[in-house]
Image (tube, rainbow, N blue to C red; front, side, top):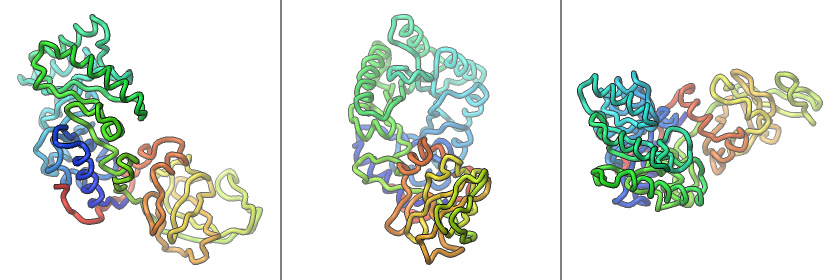
Length: 367
């Protein structure tokens, strides 16, 4: 994996400019910066963002090790032991329900300290971890959470279920009304309201409120801003071997594919053990010498085959790009979405755990 630091720095600057100075910027680096590596990404963020979002304490530790001393927010509810251990990183916890609020409060009581927190509302209809405040009983419960003396409530938040502008507009209006009602009479000026992630923040300005949580946009995995953001990841390998087989030959486990004509097949030494899911079998493509080559067999644990019959000069040792650009071609997230049948992040966060990774491009900071 090659991670282009200059692309990430460019994306941070571009998003910061689009948001303007009145909106807080939380850069989300959960799942080891979406597989891009917190050690690579976090040093590029400090001068441009007000806050960094994490999921695990491991991610929080990596952010602190990078030298970031600013605010950290967890972007999901955490278990009791996680909350307790997270205190050493000064994590602001995501409150995912009244019972969860009691857990966080109990940890604070044992520690003899208040824990800064963000209370999640189900205003957008995600139905995952938000308090339902659309009825009087739910509103009373939520106000009770805000009044807990052991919780220093710094934010009221939600999360959109769909990347659809109309859905975001509707959800934003509901969140606006419900959060205003919830905070009525409270010390509302010190409580940030936030629900927008990359799609909403960059497509629907009214969703931004006080703070936005930008994840995919940092890494260029979005078509927002008219293509102004740059993909930061390339996944590369090398051709290990090439063989020619006659038409009618079968290829792969279970004789998964039969050649219609004579073909040259190149073996790529990566497989599903490396995060290249079998869903890409027969649907995915790679780049070799700036040309596309189709995956023709059923992806095995440690290898797969591509047809290079049309690339006469292809040879063992040639660079193979499985994700990202080569010459004037690119295997994009959208293409991987289609080939995989799900979002590309489902794959590339796994690649970040399984494959060697190095920084590429300039180390220019985002400031």
